[in-house]
Length: 170
Image 1 (spheres, rainbow, N blue to C red):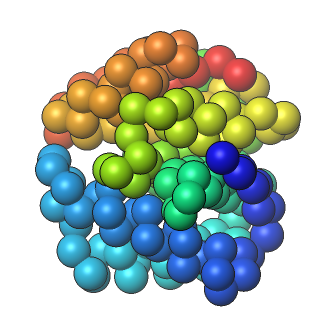
Image 2: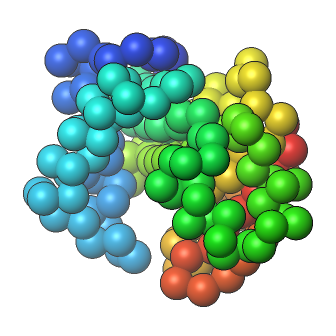
């Protein structure tokens, strides 16, 4: 099993491997994302590499593209971070979303390679060595494997609803 961490815009082959994992993982229930969302993922990686601080793209290969993780540093004024802060209110936002906090954008494991520790590896590489004191992410409440992974890795639910907002000290 090989893992790599990119902290700048990834090369074509790296981005294609990430796209392969994303399409396979998020094409299944409960997400059921199609080609438009996969194309949006590729655009997001490129845009974040150019516009956001602290890009972290983890890619794991296990006889083919197996896992991916995407994270960036979030600060007040970043769209998603500010929506998350509104959800939890000023006191919780101050606690969980200081400047910067790590925004975990995606963690995905190819369905054919799940239950081999790849999700744990991707997660741990995403958060290792980051300058942020905390991290936040959202999780589909129906995504039981993801919820288990995050709970085992010390994440706590900050707010519920259509998506779970979760936080973790780093």
